[in-house]
Image 1 (cartoon, rainbow, N blue to C red):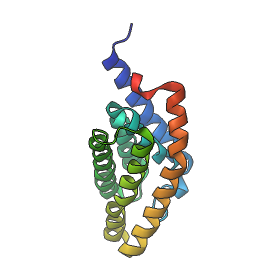
Image 2: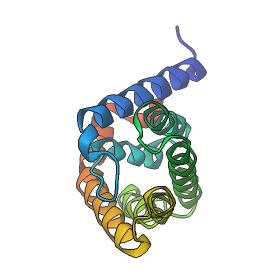
Image 3: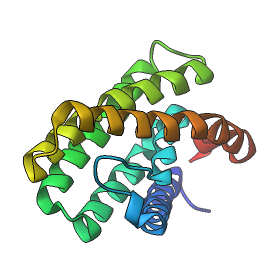
Image 4: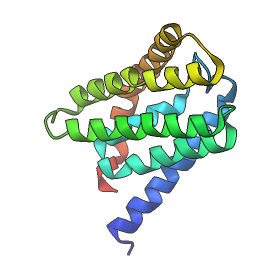
Length: 163
């Protein structure tokens, strides 16, 4: 029998691999001022199980290390944006007990935090900050809003909290 810690570690590895694969599939649209990373839907896993946030974080770091045209800047800014947002949602889960409301909060946290990605793009390629923030905010909001009910349904089927 496998221990809960081992299962959590395995699930984090699986989540990182899924994040990486989903981002590679949409690679041309995964970076830049308008981003549609369908893998961002995995950010919602933190709503169901805080212990699985490390898989999402690892997936972001791996993709940005291996494929981002912005190199270490994207690793740093993307990593801080993702981990920070995941941790904020984990903290919010202590006060927001309703999963549907927490999914909405998570969507807003991630969308608002895209200011860090806009800042990185401004630094890397002199993209205009506010326009870039507007587009990254909207693209994150769309992906997160569409995927929230999908992740809710997936959790009902497989129960992320058991890992």
